[in-house]
Image (tube, rainbow, N blue to C red; front, top):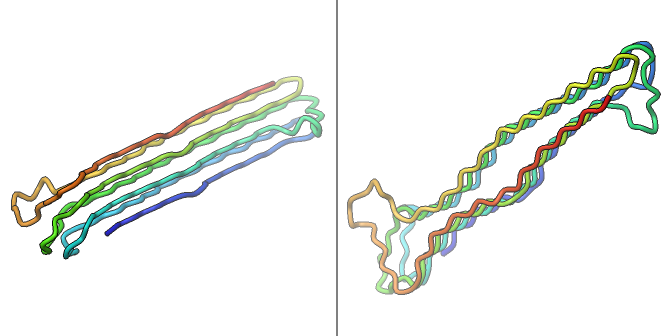
Length: 194
């Protein structure tokens, strides 16, 4: 018997702004991303296993999240302002990732012992943020800000610590695996040019 929860995807937010020319040039880009991603696999007491050979609970999430803010005109198109140039880029990313796998309470009423029990939770992926801004003029102002608030909660649980009863027991001949893995690559880049 296998309980499987699998989340795989990409989330991308981009904003761009630019000015070409004039006495006053202003380019501002603001990107805001809020992500709440949950992947849960659960086997509980509602399931009664009769002569089951093995039980597996597996939760897997693989995510690529990117946020970009560009507050400047492309180099091949901008001529700059003759007076004041302002280029601003701001990016904010708030991400919560929850990946859990649980076999809490099971009833195994058959005569055959379980061969294997496996509880695994895996979270992998990348989170990137790029903030760029540029300005050109007699007076140039180029503020950039990048804020990344992110957390990942990965849990694999076998059994229920709150239960003291022996009604839900694990009688296993083979292997028991409980494994939690979190592997996230994060990068934040800011670039201001005036």
